[in-house]
Image (cartoon, rainbow, N blue to C red; front, side, top):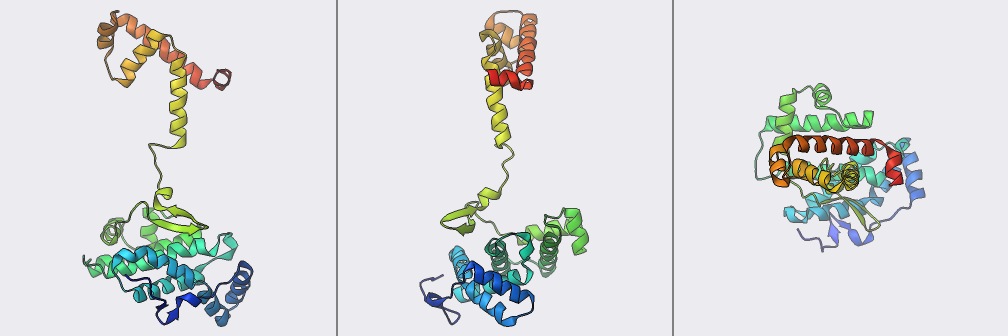
Length: 266
């Protein structure tokens, strides 16, 4: 997809207008009162946003004019549905809307054909989801989405899976002032959450407080997965002694982890 051209859809991209925040606020006040001229001015003032977004789809080999037009449709939908009372910047709201519109277009033109019924179900679910989010300011559960779209849970899952397009976790979804927000930034990592790191650090600190032999037993038992019998043979003591030392070590670690004052003192 060639992006070096200056003119897209008859629009000279080198001369796209810019509007400042005060102008945007005033135009939106006029838009909400039904001013069609203000709406056109607001669209023109955000065409640079559409242009920046379609560059992310340069690998799709789609015609740039087509992508620009589809992006403009997403922009207009964002303008019509934007709620100024939510305290969110328009660009923050509009970028996912524009990207979503372009992706829907690319799905429809994908070489991998999806049945009409699956695609229709997917679009009904997508529009129902967008409406639910606007009304409730949160993502719907699959049950809520099923009720809102009038489609069974199984059909929604099948339809959404059928129209999904793989994307890179490092694809930017929003950028401002040179700082990009990537899909990766919005993915929850349940294994490496901050609280898990803190717990691991606390556990290591608790083990440092153990006598050397108890520390060694805990490492053999819980980090290397050895049985008490195997530990007893390795350090040349009885299994009963291993059991007693292990219980004492676990008790001391538990006391340390459950007492914030001891950690601070340490």
